[in-house]
Image 1 (cartoon, rainbow, N blue to C red):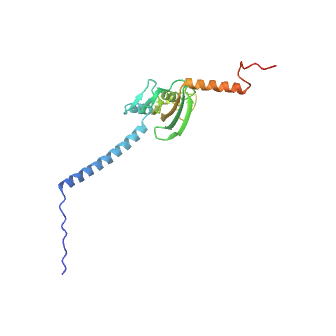
Image 2 (cartoon, rainbow, N blue to C red):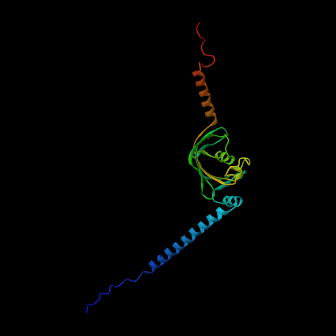
Length: 199
């Protein structure tokens, strides 16, 4: 009759058991946290615009202007803030509260003062070159600013991620325009007051 050699199993150390239970507890806590975040996200998406803005206003880093624009500074940038008639080169991305994209990530250039939705212009004027901001525009600062426009996003809060790639001061733009006008005049037959023609 053959004998079976028993292999002794060393007893589990108490410290290992403690770490095992700690790991299980952390895993359970993580699952609960994920479920809570998912539930909260769904609840926030169901808020009215007013309730959402009131909730968002209390989130870390979110600031609110007198007009109701909400923004968060992700990167502050450096130099002067954008002002009227300055030229800006941006990268923008726009989503709605439910996460649906209405503005794919894309470059954008404009001179401040050109027609834009008011909350967007207000937000850009807070920025410096190299800055990255997130804007939350209430409907009255977005496409709902003009009640006669009948825009499909007129009732939506618009969320923009904006990076200012470059800022050209208004004085530089004016100087460039004057140089361009002078070049055009020279191409069209010489600048006024040029040398007299010989007889």
